[in-house]
Image 1 (cartoon, rainbow over the protein chains, first blue to last red):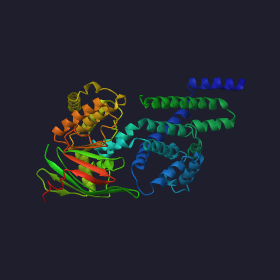
Image 2: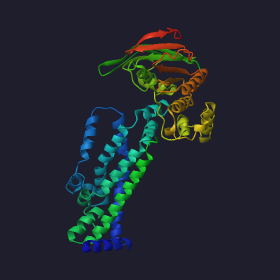
Image 3: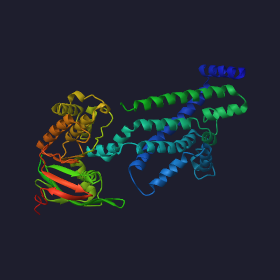
Image 4: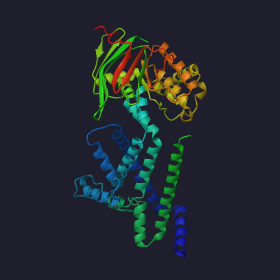
Length: 233
Length: 234
């Protein structure tokens, strides 16, 4: 127990002393995950809207595929991307393997189905009258869609927060396509895995604290957002 | 507002194997006030959604006769665009967007590209005209059923449609709210707007209807007066 307390104190010291290596790892983590979420959000919400408001052949199949994709382990995504991006793979010529761009790609693949599924569920449960009212008040279909998205904005924000929470903590894909290279592709989860395997717990605990703090903040944010969406009785 | 007529012929639609509307014919002109009655499930709301261009019928011929123009028939996708510009549909329980009464009433005007100042002036004038000015900054979720209905009617009216369709506007409304709504509807009629109201009750004596249509199991079983093709002398 004393060891854990002592390691935790050292970890706090490491964080507050501004250790460049630790903060570089944290910045890589946030940079990669923010890029991934920014790229994935708009197309995912647009797709979710199409799935919720339009009928076309194969629509149910697409919904099923996205719901299934939620359960794909990060390490399988990493393995697939590794095979595609490795020198002998079909996209080897792009030289993306072991770069931050490859990590972004992996995280997009991971968060996209979650964003689509959660946004779709939110739009599906939204009131159809919002769309009809916007149309009947003279809004073009694009503006009517924007109106509906505004009406369900709290559900969409929850989807984005949940997706961000998933990708910032994933280790499988980042490890395989990023390669865990110090100051380049080493992020919080891959660094924790490495330091723990080395038996050096201080940095691992420090980074774990960052992840936990972030998870706590995201949940506070989510609760605050959901609170704003409450119905006044 | 110009004089115009729109004629709907043979409107039919099915849901699965159930026929919801079967060969409905009707004609509307500006300033018409139509009462549409029928039991639940008789097809009133479906017919209103087709007339407003929100629902595609399986079969229908729709023709427009502008006051100085030629009789015009278009395919559904063109006609739908025209209907959506001309007709405003209000649900039985009107949907108000999240935000204030001002945001809601201003919605249609924003789509028309008016300046912020013009929108503010028009919204204030309109709310004042119908004694709703006290509600201007009120969150729509805090309004009573009657207030919601009146705000929704004003929100439709401010976009200057040629026709407003009110789906069971008086259901769940107390006497006072009904009276206020009747006043509002009488105003709309004076403004040359065509109105269709659906109701379970005949609403006798409350408003001066120009047509009464009764639907039963998707068919018109009663129509007064029989105005078929009166204004469409082809």
